[in-house]
Length: 84
Image (tube, rainbow, N blue to C red; front, top):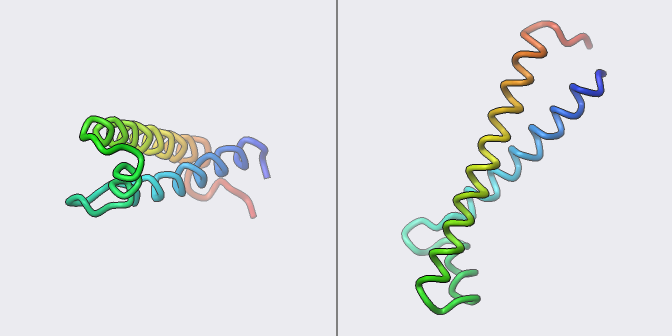
């Protein structure tokens, strides 16, 4: 296998798993894991907002990395070009 292919596949897989984890951390109607963490760390509403904004940013970064690595895989290795 090509080292570039291995590197892009690793980045793609790690970003996919990270994207799943950080999407699951988001709160849905105030009962998410991030609310449990935020309520134990900060008792004010401003602390929760900071944590949610950072969680949003990290999720967006993982989504962008996932999509870019997927596009690189599609451009470098079109259908049928990877030999077994």
